Image 1 (tube, helix red, strand yellow):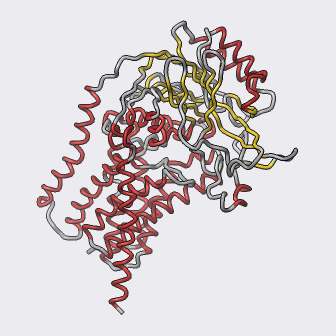
Image 2 (tube, helix red, strand yellow; image 1 turned 90 degrees about the horizontal axis):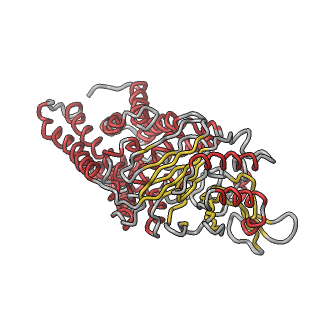
Image 3 (cartoon, one colour; image 1 turned 180 degrees about the vertical axis):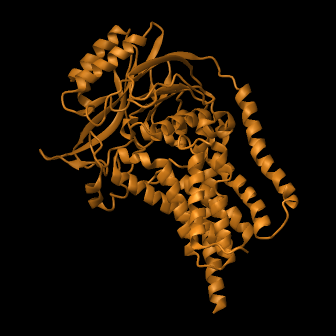
Length: 536
């Protein structure tokens, strides 16, 4: 076996991170590179094992790979917060490296075959659990890699995004097996032909199934006409400035009026379009609401879905987000909300529930209260916000839709629960201006295609700036707006009430693998301690 110097090992670690990066949307967009991106780090793990080096070397090289991947793919978070970016990049890399180390330990103490299988189980289990805890940062879920190639992943309507993650890992393992046989076992390339056939099958079969589904899928005709507004208000220097709300609403109303027709069924405005916080119970008496009703009346009272910063008062502590009032007894909660103004001007509010760590929720501050002082202020309020206990939907006189605010759109199972409750359409209100003109807003927009495929629901996306667009039930994006350009777009989209397998049963793959991973990890540690005990 050729001896690899330390610098060569680290170059291979960095190479793995670079390959993962260039396969990811808008940091390279070379999607199929994802199927070989893990080969260098898998090779390093086997090399370290064969040399009987300490297991910590596996962790070190894995961390180098995943830090490179996180840094080069999500560096743009710096535009919102340097501290938040470093926290996300460092901690997410740490979690990924720990999961890879679990694979190494299983392979080392249980067996090679079990070890390779464990990589699939641990990683999918990790990605699923990462969606379901407070420090969730799931941007780099492997299955998100295919968000710019919807024609290849129509089967996400069965597996969800984790099916794509499994696909990536399985193909990488097969390609690595070929390299392992040639490099470590000194077999000829010719002998690898059957494994090449296996790799080809794993690549081609899901692709063909998806392409057939993509070309044959037909949406049921159930059209409504929707306007999506992109007001393009600078979140750093304008949006949250005192006294600017009226000007901003005038801008939104003007854009809506330009696209409105007698057939318009819904107008969608972006996250925190009402940037000045207000008490939800007072909305009917507020000046901005009277203005909205006047503008709405000019447009035949078409319903509006619009983002807002809201508050509520409680006599007793309602949740961890409740803060004591300075002016007297009681508690106040702040929310990143969206609300519906129906045809008759009645309103409903839904609070954003999947919150951005470090900005809208301070992970584990329920147990470590001092962490609230570390929250990042990105306009409006900072610290932990109030949330809904479960997904909610809005209902107009004619249809139901899922209100999805910004970060919530990367949570497939959350949106699926909204569709399960009857949502016929997905409406995303977001403000991607924090990240400036970087891959961030483009990636965020592309992830919405995955929600369309998973649930076979049309998507309407209204961004303060970034990309506003429409997405059909196959995941195709239409009428994408330009960065930093005020705009309004309108399109006829189809409602859908049918439920996909994923809508009905949720993330079966993630739940199953996360459950098995716990027992597999326990089994690994039992084997490790038995070996250690016997060796003594």
